[in-house]
Length: 272
Image (cartoon, rainbow, N blue to C red; front, side, top):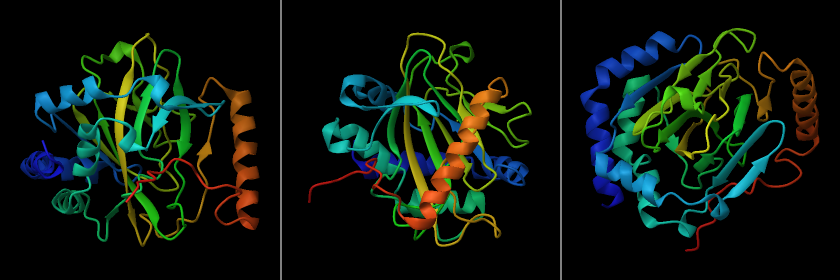
């Protein structure tokens, strides 16, 4: 199916469930606003995403004390169906209905897929509690929404690898949103939106397709620029100290180098 045809399915499901999704987002937006919707795409399209997802050897490994996962934004190196799906979430009508659900203005999807695209985690891989970088690559626009679409069939609670939201900080229990097959999660991104992915507990690939929406203004009026900042999990006090120092050091670097010492390679460098 084409990007336009896929976007029609996404739009119709969001529009059909708009009232319930708005309620879910509004109930949570005082801390970390989010909503999720199951069966966002027809089963056959979701299964195609799973079947055509690239293998680890065709993705870039990120491995540190902050995170351990495989990623790719270079969509022309993968099956065209995956590119069609990822850009369907950037269709004007889809963006418009998400604006309505979240009561936001001036949302802009990101064709470059800066820090978005595809991610894959296998056994013992993880993403520590963190705040996303506040801006786009040029520091012109604010990152405001994160769209996560999960495409691993039969992904159960016991598998781990689930989205965790920490509205009360990383010393309290998180809200766990299961990485359920064919589920779309939309979450707010600002200076309080700490989130993570719990370690994967079995030898099976957990697959995700992600997009970010940006805006000329931040979600929180008093928000300020910040780099991607990590914390330790509650059971990781030593790692928490190291990661806090790491975040402060990288913020110090940004005072002298606005866009960082090197450009982030995680963008879609599409040939025209």
